[in-house]
Image (cartoon, rainbow, N blue to C red; front, side, top):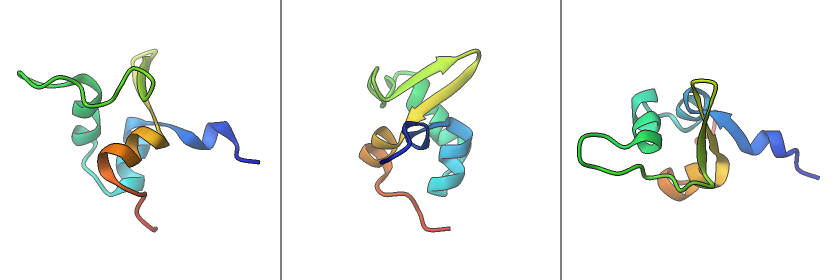
Length: 68
C-alpha cells in the first residue's frame, strides 16, 4: 500500500526531486505577474508559510519524477 505522505511534499523538495528551480514550483503555486497559479486547489496549498504540492500535480505539470 502506498504511503499517502509520499505523495505530498514541500515545493522545495518537489523542485529537487523533479530537477527544477524552486522558484518554478513556487510560481506554479502562487502565480506571478498576470499568470494565475498552475496547480489546482487539490494539488497545492500553503501550510504555515510553506507550499505543499502533490505528486499528481507535479506529474500533471512537469511530467514524471526525475531519476536520482
